[in-house]
Image 1 (cartoon, rainbow, N blue to C red):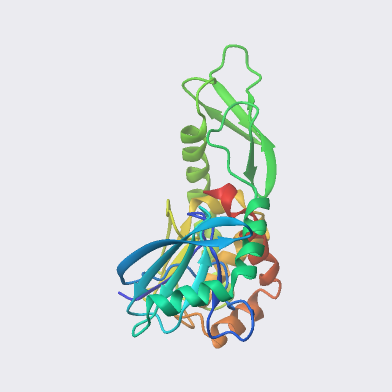
Image 2 (cartoon, helix red, strand yellow):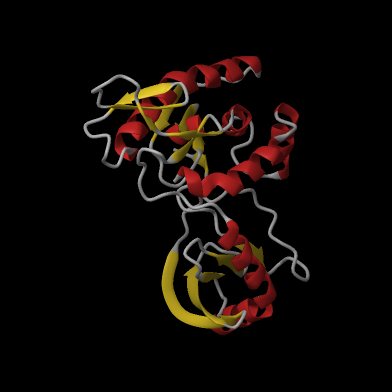
Length: 274
């Protein structure tokens, strides 16, 4: 069953990338939701590259589906070069070396991205509907419950990591709110959606199948409403174009003219949503 899936990302933050087909040091024109593609990786070579006076891990990966050399900076700080069919490790190293300046700039951007806290404890701040909310103990005396924004969540121990309990609460909330919103958009744009699911994807914001199934990540409940709506419209437009072609993006722009702002928000905040 063919399917078009869109990241996102929080799985890991989307690695910054540069393409050997770009002229000079132009960046690859790919949106942050387009990391769903499963690569056929045949071999991996680990080396290092001196960037900004520091040794940067360099990983060379062969991919028989790739059409060009692609350089990306991974969330863990390693540089990865994809070697296309017929390519060589030597050419991949030279490609990385030619783009040292780009790697150094990408490192600086990576260092400024917000980092998700390891645990959600009382006093921690989380995203909810795009707003930063502080987790606090519920007002009721003796209650094993916490609150954030308008929500109240029962927990086993207010001193423990609250992420599992709050995560389940957010997931249930998303499962109640997101599907009706998708169906309303589908009706508005005269599209047939057979099923909407809310899942715990580790690597994508959503997906759309040719059979009309839309799957969304429950973490969309943490994003601002315009960003949430953009992901829904993005997936719905795949019912017209099951790809990320120029025609697809024209469809997206028609239904969501401010989509680039949503992409930018997701790119800057994806680490907080993982």
